[in-house]
Length: 106
Image (tube, rainbow, N blue to C red):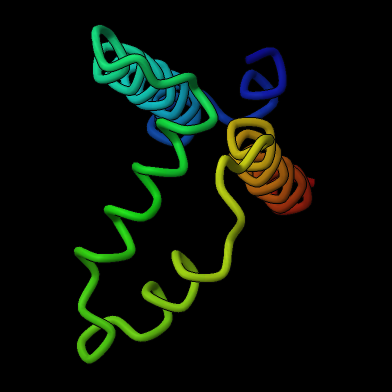
């Protein structure tokens, strides 16, 4: 969040804080929902995530969304590292935004 302070105060700074906070909230909610879904079912986390991925693959219509269908069919589940990857992707984008904003101010 300290990096966001290098942006001019205003919508961009607030947008960065909201983006990161929203990502963390969504990831946490998804983890909690998957854990709740495992309760009483006797499935461990790896099996539950595999089942979740297979369900998503069945729900995606390959005729309408061929790229998404291919992704769900090909990515091994459980996929460890999706939170870190997503956070890194967001932070790289924020870094680019800050670098661009800094250049425009000088």
